[in-house]
Image (tube, rainbow, N blue to C red; front, side, top):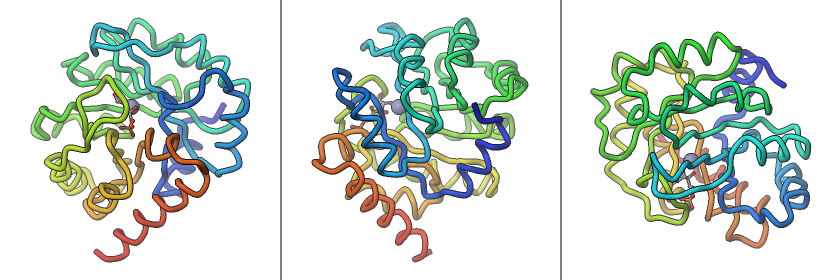
Length: 234
Ligand code: DX5
Ligand code: ZN
């Protein structure tokens, strides 16, 4: 398992990073899915954890992630769309999640939890829903390593990108500077990735736009190129 410092330098060194969202993968054939993702050179896998309470859907938890951990060495980011994530922190660290992202809407006072995640040697991520303004996190950005801007309502893959969130990426970048890793999640594909990249995003979570394509590797390479081109322009 990577240390927090290793994770941070790996992520910063590989930007723009396309992080496949495993919600859309074939759970009947995880071994094959991991082989394909390894071959695509993915630097980070995004693991969507849903509890049917914080979001109106259920996905998977530490047991399945532990199973995945045995199949790949790629870094894991657990996106915890769950209530009371502090109760389950240990479980996700034990199964090898090197980044853990919690929602401000689930933990309105997240400073203690973010510090604890960092203290445990794990990359600390903070996510906000589309309706949450940047002013709600302004004083918290220095407490996290990764800031995740949701570009759909959390809970389901395959939704339409909400373009209004792009200004939050831009604002977060100007408030926090270049050290903060900024990520966007939901509806990211060929028509939305450039705007996010131009606004200063580093990590692009992609579910449908990778797993609905016949070749994951080609889909990821194309998205990464679009993100890179948008970045050079500005
Ligand atoms: C939504 C999840 C996303 C989602 C992404 O709650 O956090 O990670 O699975 O899927 P697409 O890319 O299809 O929107
Ligand atoms: Zn997610």
